[in-house]
Image 1 (tube, protein in one colour):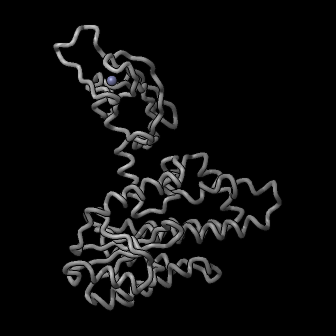
Image 2: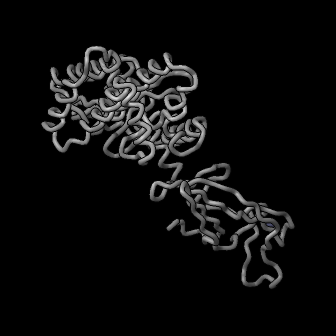
Image 3: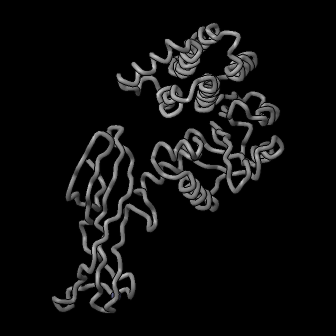
Length: 350
Ligand SMILES: [Zn+2]
């Protein structure tokens, strides 16, 4: 189940929220990392690495069946017969000071190209500074092997790095980082695109709906289809719902605010992930505050637009969605404006 070949699982526990595996490395160390001594068949029988101490170290891995994974590594420290020093065994699947398995770290680094650090931090229960550190490590590694051939599908995102908003350029189809620009202005975006070989061949660009640099793409590659990233649109809808939640909360007596404060995830999360008891609670609030109910289903509705199987179906769903917005919903205006702009210019959704 765990599928990390270097480890043997010695204990497995689970509860409602997580699986916990206690593991040990199967093999003994090959070499002393202090002095470089390697055990050979000519050495005396007593000249072996002996366990000196075991330290438990807990790390996370990718979730299984949507439950969090905790791995307790019984990390062994050995005594070397040659130098008499001690050393911790080398682990293949975890980097020295990390709290996550390498494969989760790599996954987080790729996600960080697309999703705000804070959302990732939430999802995997790590701090956003850790996400940022992993991402910066990734950027540094990539710095040397950047390639500048234009991709078929170019993604442009924004990331807040070193106190500055920067443009992050990715090959969306191949999930590859191309470039991190010094800022995200139209001028810089233009320069980066022009520096790519055969940039005229870029067929699709995916961008944030609020981005000012979309005109840069239109000027350089008029035939390029601009696509507004699903993630960003859904995020806007969540923000709109959240603004309405806060507005309703303001007028409530303190003792009635609990649901809207502490249990706000019931509203902001995905409807299909809710348990029955949460649905009941949510619906009680909907009875009391019809505006909240309306905003909630608009948020879910925009997610539904993206679940369509074809462009036609998506546009149909969008038209229906738009017709359901009442005038007092200033909060959803930004989404409407973007979609309508997109349609006018024959742009697409992804
Ligand atoms: Zn040694």
